[in-house]
Image (cartoon, rainbow, N blue to C red):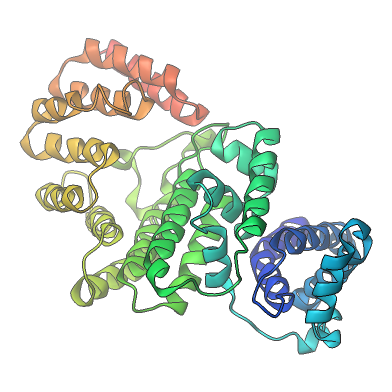
Amino acid sequence: MTQDERVEDVLRRLAPQVLGILVHRHRDAHGYSDFARCEDAVQEALIAAADAWPRTGVPDHPLGWLSTVAARRYVDLVRADSARERRERAVLDATPPDALVAPAPDEEPVRDDLLELLLLCCHPALTASSQLALTLRAVGGLTTAEIAAACLVPEKTMGQRISRAKQRLREVGARFEPPPEHEYGQRLHVVLHVLYLMFNEGYSTSAGSELRRADLTRPALHLVRRLHERLPESGEIAGLLALMVLTEARSQARTGPGGTLVPLAEQDRSRWDSAAIAEGVDLITQTLATRPLGPYQVQAAIAAVHDEAPSTEATDWPQILALFDVLERLAPNPVVTLNRAVAVGMVRGPNEGLALIGELESGVLAGSHRLLAVRAHLLEQAGDRTAAATTFQEAARMAGSRPEQRFLLRRAAANRTT
């Protein structure tokens, strides 16, 4: 790992902790925090570190370094805002004098404010798209440009969305503290969904030249690990962690020379991470035995069946189909039905899978490259090579990811020559 890569890795890892420290430290007497100003101060500290550390090296106490700089930037921002003098006075009066000066690095308290920070970003006053954007920015450590690319919107639009989200938190007086008991379950559900989306976008990017984005998968997996440490009794957190671990275990085998996409059936399973598979299988096995069943646990169980199989042919497809049946009852949605169609095709034959696909062609997935790709795969399995080639070609036109486009075009060409 180069010095620049090490700096980037440290900054991404510590950014959420620094923000949590700052937001916690500068709450007023009623528990309200100026999230926007804290986030701005942290961003300035990250910029300062990105400028200094490649030249001077990562300091011995990077968390203390960042917290100190961010705290000073926060005070500067408060004092510079003369138009809001009364608010500044309230913040300064409500904060103990020694809290405005960050402690020395060796004295920086180790805090775990991750859950509160995630819950704040997923406040019910925000729209789903704003919750995702704010989490990626504040907790995932991504830039506005990176979030815009991941969400397929212009950078200016994403910047406005993030600004509106922070303004909305101010308007509703969002507090940096656990939500009321009646909101807790709902807020945690949103947190897990946002992290699930974050990981999926990183594992299989929807647009661009790269097949995957480790800058999304890494923080998503890290944050779910932290949540599991904080709330080990939650079956769905454990299920999501197991799902991510089992999925990430296959990542090295998904790409061939030049970054080409290698589908699951063609992957060299000796390149799968056996230690990660063992961890994920143990986690989901224990969770299924001791916790109420939830959608993430079922998805993790499906991933475990895939990961434990020595080959596609040896995979227990009837068990996978049974698990998809359970998942469709727990969390029915078109994507689940689409994935279930593949299992139906493997167990009952491709024509039954195609019949199930037909039910989706008038819904939200109509015309999507993923639906077309599954249809083409099932047509190929059914022996209709001409229709498969045409459908693979159409799927390639609709795909936003260039590695996926190239893979689909190769499948189209292969079906034309057979």
